Image (cartoon, rainbow, N blue to C red):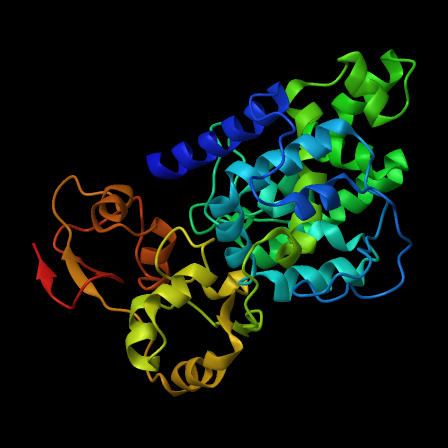
Length: 379
């Protein structure tokens, strides 16, 4: 992650910390008495179907599970509304890119609808977010969490940044946590600190619920803040119009997955299909290179539905692989790994286009086809 993203995430965490410490207190947002009163009304409602309109509607607020009647949640709500509205608006806007995938996945598993907003807390709905501890993607998955759910992490891609696959893995993990602990507060806590660590805490302490553990100071500091932060964001983002945020009427992005039979350079695909490169790069942020992996990966390119026909037509009509090539003439001392590093590709990619090449016995003067750049010879 770049320094700017690290700085933004640090500022967000600091902001939440200031709320918890009381620096923002429980003061009501200036000139927004009605919002403050709603933020203090914690009457739980049963799950009776779809949420009502979020804009210009003053009916009852409905949630999938009871929101906790805890002062720390109210303080987070009021602090966010009074000091972090710009950030909330940015998060809400970014969420539109992914709701079309996340919301149906939540519903298909019978999970609480509000889990849709967990990436707001984890990454601010930024698919390339990464933490100093190594958590990556919308859902901030660690390697040891992602691997059991089949997410690949190698020199070609890091599927923790695949918003589709990471969503499915994260929701499966949350469902697993709920089956283990039987309580959504504890399931969320385990998502943050790990189910093994939380299980040890529960065995050690007499308290068996999250809020008692929090009051006793038995939880890691980050976890103690994580759950109330989530509930605060879930309440605001479930009904953004009621909290003074702008709610547009643009539809959510509808994504489709298109099988790719082999390596395709996204830059060439963008040029030939007319689809903006930025769209292809953003939709396939798991790629470590601006190209899809070899055919053995069974990779599926993710594009907004409006671009489906253009991409499929381009892929089907390509007489040659959608890649540019250069020719490298082997010199004394050359190795495939050095060659790959020099041209910004992988050893596997070079071997795919040079099947007769023997990595440990490169012949001086041999010509190696390297899929990158423009066709030219280097010697």
